[in-house]
Length: 190
Image (cartoon, rainbow, N blue to C red):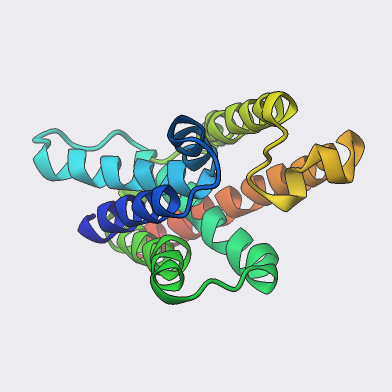
């Protein structure tokens, strides 16, 4: 949890220090990254769990794990080859895209009550990435800023971006299915 808060705050400071746009525009752009939103979600989820006396809602940890796993996978497969950060930016990127996803996945394997997670929760888990997609497409159309190259309508065209989005949504469904399948399998073996 502390690592995630540190990484998100450090990334914010780096973006503010290196901004090429106004501070308000830089802040909007900062919160336009799925990586930032999802790492913030991870930090808030674990902070709430730390201070909550209630049992966590069934499937909440699995949803958070799904989102941060996608952050890690997309970065490793799509973005790492085209992005070469240095210094503190490289350190923060590794925290946001590698360390936090692996830590959350390990935590999920050890502590999620997998028996209570249901297959019918998967469609609900897709709402967050769909809302995100709509937001960045509308925002990108208004500002000409797209946070990721695979959703850049200006350079790729809407049909390619929609195809990329469908592929990514399929990846979300596949990873969610794998997580639930592994969860059900591991809960049977206990």
